[in-house]
Every structure is written in structure tokens, then in C-alpha cells.
Length: 277
Image: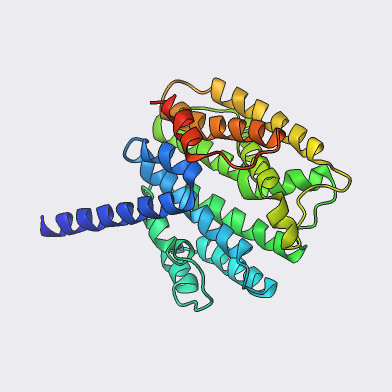
């Protein structure tokens, strides 16, 4: 009984740490994830934070590209090993290059995931790590819409796929995987528009050659329309309730960007979220 209680306390501490980290790293996903049922909440939290951990390596402003590629590929190999949690800790815990806590605690986020869902989260995190390393090597070189599709799949489309597999794992909810990719891709396209000036300042341009803001806006709206269809086809339940909030925020941000705005106010976010209480 003592060992059971100790394990229960440790699990609750990790979940509490994860929810604090989630709130610090994502205004968009914290609320819908925190509302999920036990079990699914841990799985989605694990998946989100694991992928955020990888993303922070790719986006790190002080790491040399060679170091980013090395770390991302080592994490990929660790995740594909027989002991992914332990091997991931060996890669990230000893680093002294200023990686944020969301990255160095990747092993904690993986351990949080229910054992039967963990293979899903680990597989997609390894895929993302591998593909992000490839984007670093190529210098995020986006020339065509096909390049943009590949990039938005690497960093967000596969998140939609992972979520769809988690819905299926939790309660058998089926979904369209192509539209799941569009769900993630649409949210990422909103971020690309919103962060346009910041990205250009650091020498990265996610707009294909010759594209105007209007072109990217059309790309975003096209994917968000498919995301609407993705949600409409989900059965009533936690998956549908979860997806509605980030998609509503994405639509509102897109409308704001179209008229020259940039970021939703906290009041606007709360008003939108309040519609789904």
C-alpha cells in the first residue's frame, strides 16, 4: 500500500508540473487540455509538451544549427530505442546549453502518458524530431506551396494525426486523417502570419516565393475550412469539445490579421472560450 501511495503522489506531482508548464507555454491549448477527462488529459498533455520540447530545440536562438541537428537526431534515436524515457533523459538532462525546462524534462512528459497511449506519443515525437532536424539542415528553405505543406505537416500536421490516434485510443472516436492534418496545418498557418515580422528579423521566411499576405491568408482559410469539416465529423465527446476551442481562436485570429491586427486580447480569448463552457 505504501508503494502504491508513493506512486500516486509522484504521478500527481508530475501532472501538476506538466499543467503548470502547459499554461506557461500555450495560451491556446491549456484550457481545452485542462478540461479533458482523466487519462485522455495526461495523454494529450504528454503529446503536446513532448512536441513543444522538440520545437524549442529547433527554435533556440543561441544554439548553432549543427548542435540543433545533433540534439534532434539524438532525441529521435533515443525515442526509437527500447527504453525511450531513460534514453531521452540521458540526452537532454546533462545538457548545459541553456535549453528550457520544457525540453530538458521531456522524459517527465513521456512518463506522464498512460502506458497504452505512450507508443503513439513517442512515435510522433520521434518523427517530428527527425523532420525538424531536416528543416534545420536545409535552412527552412520554403520556395513553393508544396514546401510549405511539408513544413506545416512537420511541425503541426502530424500533431493533428497524433490527436486523432489518441481520440481513437481513448474511446474509439474515428476521424479523417487528411482533415486532421489540415486542422494542425491551419493552426500553424495562423502562427506563420502572426509571427511574420519576427521570423523575417531572424532570417526565416515561411512564405513561398512570390506569395503575398493575401496568398497566405487564402492558404490558412482553406486549411481552417477543412478543420471545420474535421470537427463536424467527430462524434459528440471529448475530442469534439477539445478541438472547438483552438479552432475558434484560430478563426478569430485570422479575421483579426485580415484587418491589420495581430494578437487577440485576453478579454477576446476569454469571451471565445466562454462560448464552450
